[in-house]
Amino acid sequence: MATKDSLKQGGPPTARARSRRGNTQPTRFKEFIAYFKKYLALGSVGCGVLPVPLSYFRVIPTFQAQYKFLAGYATVFCFLALGFIFYSRHSIAGWIFSGARKQGGAAKALIAWLPLALIGASFVSLSAYHYLLQIAISRAIADYGVKGVNLNDQLALINTPFEDIKLAIPLMVSYLFVFLAAEAAFAMMAIREYMQDILNLKDSEIVNLRRGLEP
Image (cartoon, one colour):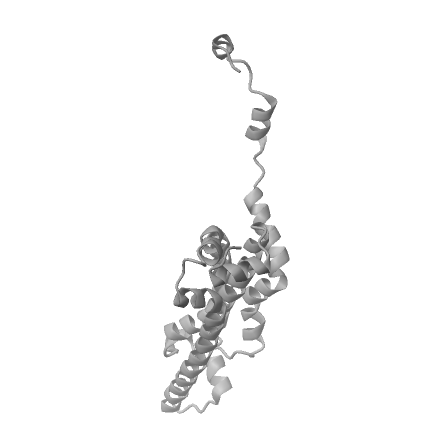
């Protein structure tokens, strides 16, 4: 027990205090790297960089004037979504695990089916993108026809300048959300597995929590 004299003397910090003070390693960043490597691996990278080859090889058709910045934006926002989901991991874990028995039936269903809903949103966005793209191509061909130039779909995609692209902003939003929703779905499934391992929860305990039973 510390005495008054020892407190007055104010000796040097103990080895334990020094070790705590000197422990400045970025452990949270290491956790993120571990999460990224173990649970996301190539899947997350694929969602982030996939727009580049898809647009370049015309798997997803885009206007030549748009495809470079669309691919860049998709990559940036996908990795931002990934970072935000990891940043919110504690709240997500509380929502999925500790709050499971307190949730109503609708909330439990939302927790279970949110990744599937995000996958569905990605598919809907892809459908919307193709629908808007076809309208934009038709208008571009019509504009060139007024000028006496006959173009097919591929030539319209290549030759239409950015300022002449109709529905350019809706096209951009729907294109980005295709990959953003897919990335969020993948990251949500991965963060659940990651937090289950961190909390040392077994599958049987998760099932009991969802049933409202004691784990």
